[in-house]
Image 1: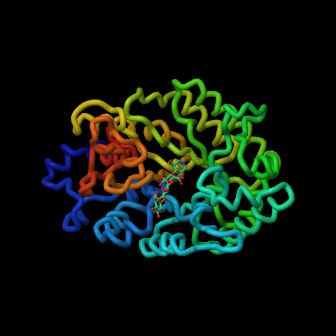
Image 2 (image 1 turned 120 degrees about the vertical axis):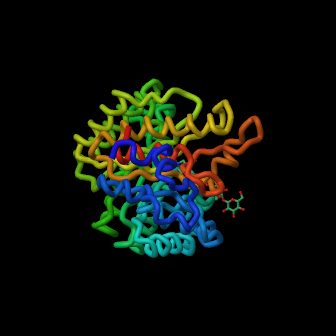
Length: 361
Ligand code: G3I
């Protein structure tokens, strides 16, 4: 298999690197390559873009064995008012996934961001348990058997908040204390005992950042504590928002951290992978190559851990990435953080991910 999917190999074999439908059968998608090693490959989507762009829908069908709603399972979308659920967009994501036989990764049941204004007003120590149970029970229950896995608690660790346990000062922590975390997992488990339940966070990836090394320690304590108390948690979500302008420091530290998570008895899902080239210098081609090298270095280390069972990129094509608005480049060009470019042509990043899945050198 070595080298089988490199661009040179494909060009030598006379195969186009364009992603047009007429080439649909000429190479396996990332989902198929990941499947061969027991991993789901997914992407985060906005249902409206899939519905308005037929080529994008076809690309997702060919490449993805998993899908995550980028925004449509967050409170601010699902819960416009205290007594009202709006499941329109979330239902659509589940239907799109079903139509292509992809596993849905739900995102996110409890998060300190993307909450409707009313939540902060209504959440008190007296009401919080009922509100949490109503939300998680209602959402997870609706999609029981249809959503394979859930980010139950997203980004609960923030060492800058200076609590001895390292937990973030969030509206949920303020209302319920640290118990909101096991309560969220237990409630989700009751609503769908078959769902894989995940605690996700960022800032765990780089070996050369002292705050990330510390955060790994805090995270391990949190995960081990949850397991000890019997909380139904099944995986750590490693977000994987990487940077294109710094060394790819994914070595022994990351490897050891993932091993420790696996030893606790948890799987590991990469839930939001992308490489931000906002500050990456060079020509477009040089930037794309730099981004690809970072994907490859990260995935080589991560996929070396057998507990890793899912890799999801935060979008699939540079045509649709929230990073364009969030991270404008100083030269006015758009960022290019994903495996396909805006014309749905495979980028060096696609080949890097493919080669990481196949183990090609
Ligand atoms: O849908 C509305 C639209 O109706 C309105 O006209 C427009 C005006 O601003 O806003 C639209 O909503 C935006 C939404 O993305 C969809 O584009 C929100 O304002 C915007 O805040 C929201 O940003 C999302 C952000 O999370 C906050 O929820 C990003 O798309 C999404 O990529 C980002 O994802 C997060 C993960 O959930 C958690 N980890 C970090 C990651 C990246 O920041």
